[in-house]
Length: 142
Image (tube, rainbow, N blue to C red; front, side, top):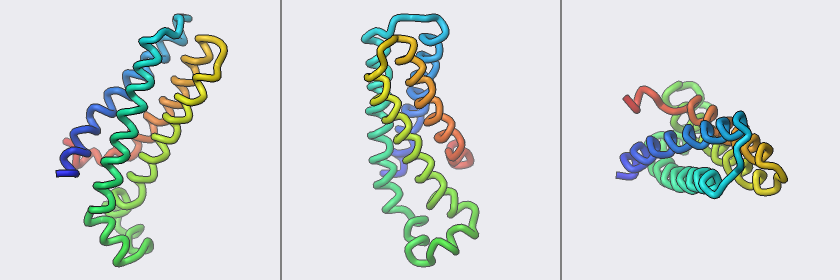
């Protein structure tokens, strides 16, 4: 059940990150004013990604890959590409993605101009998006 929730919530999370990045790029390139709507998009994306990482951590610590990792060690996990993806690469990249998204939201609040706010969101959320896309287990998704 946790795995299904994690997979389903992942679609929502990915869509929102893409939407937040596109919104920030549009705001940056069109010199828009950073309004309440833009703040809400960034904040809602931040909240959804944090919920996803919590669900993901529960899924991780109850997974067969984590059991394999604890029983056989990191060396054995690194030799098997599928176990390495699920036990090491995917969790690490998703945690880093959430860290970048969190940093972006935190840093944008200190920016004086609307352009700098949009730029900060675009860069940090964009890095988070690239990290997410790099380690989504695509074979499991489709």
